[in-house]
Amino acid sequence: MDLERQFLDSIEAAAELYEQHVERGDPIRIVSHSDADGIAAGGILSQTSLRSGVPFKTTCEVRLDEEILKGISEEKAPLIIFSDIGSSYLDIIAKHLSGSDIIILDHHPPIEAEEGRIVHINPVSHGLDGSRGISGAGVAYLFSRRIDEENIALSPLGLVGALADQQDKGEGKSLIGLNRRIEEEAREAGLLETRTDITLYGYETRPLYRALAYTTNPYIPGLSGREDRCLAFLKELGIELKREGRWRALRDLKEEEKRILFSALSQHMIQEQCSVEAIHELIGKVYIFKGEEAWTPMRDGREYASLLNACARMERPSIGIAICLGDRGSAVEEAEATLNEYRRRIAEYLDLVRGRASIVEMENIYALSAQGEIDDRIIGVVASILISTGILKKKMPIVALAKAEGGLLKVSGRLTDELAMEGINLGKVMMEAAERFNGRGGGHDIAAGAFIQEIYEEEFIRLVNKLVGEQRKARGTDNPKI
Image (tube, rainbow, N blue to C red; front, side, top):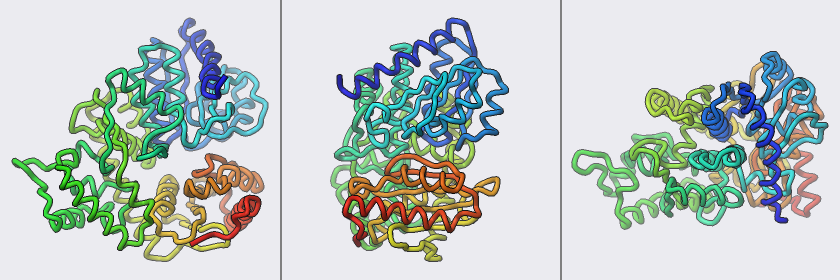
């Protein structure tokens, strides 16, 4: 039996438990991760509960701790479902929620712990790649699809979660693994259309200059976050920006215009010392959701993901959940305003980092100590942009730290796929380093995080540098290349 089939069969136990509670009319308590993938996953499970005709409550959490779990325990919910979070907290979930049935639907590497009454569904436990092959929303969707075949209508949200987690690692920025299964189901249901094109943000919906300014994956130095500069850049190329009184979007450009635009962007990024890989990120597979209205941000898969990401990073996940539940009015308006503020902050933070030369080069990692100058919910985004643009010249991971609540530091580690193939696994590094200082960490090989007490910052960074060096040495790649 292949690994994917083993994983899909494992969902049966969770589905049976869920159906038992639905038959009794029990309320469902949903706890999801507070990032874009987690919001999409929480939206899928909220929709599933709504369609099952049972009451539900959904909240999103950045992390789990004993205080949060004690609060959930006091609600005395018969069934609690954790989505895109939970596998790194099996021990304290089992400890504090022993009075409830628990389902965990996650794709992050789990810790070793006694699971008690927990039904734990995770592709990693079946030898599958949770970093690239399926997202938390994808796991939630496959669970939902098992509950009711009509829930295939939620397949676009499963793809949104994958795109939000940047799992488009296949050829031409395509999805791979179990994500491809979800993609095919969405296409067969008439919900999805794909094409290869320039992947600027807002392919279908935004005026071209704004789509360019809003694009941060890849980050385009001097243009991302700068509408005035983008307008001047496009005018200089001679591309017609308006036609018959309406701003043109990328979808409206002729092939020759797209060729001119891509060539000019490539030259600009070369001048800004971006990597060849970052330039290649400009072209890829575009995911269009046919069930969404044209000229709305939910029409394009990556734009939908960016909208949910902004809601998460700006501490407004409830707006994202409302959008996933079908609100196409006030929730979308609030989310777009949130997105504008979020992008403005990213541009400010990147200017701050580059202007102050605050990135420290160590033997095996780059370290960025943001203190209180960068929001702890956005520090991971800043790290991702820095590692993906080629701004950091040596091929090493970056570890960024920002102040969080309660005297804690939020740590975000990022590296490239190339480094992961050389044997560096930041998820393992973060887990081990955080445990040494009474913190908690984990995640994927290319993107991981931790929470530690602020007093341990310098020791923690030194330990992470040491552990990454040990991983390099074990694979014979202990000399970071330029």
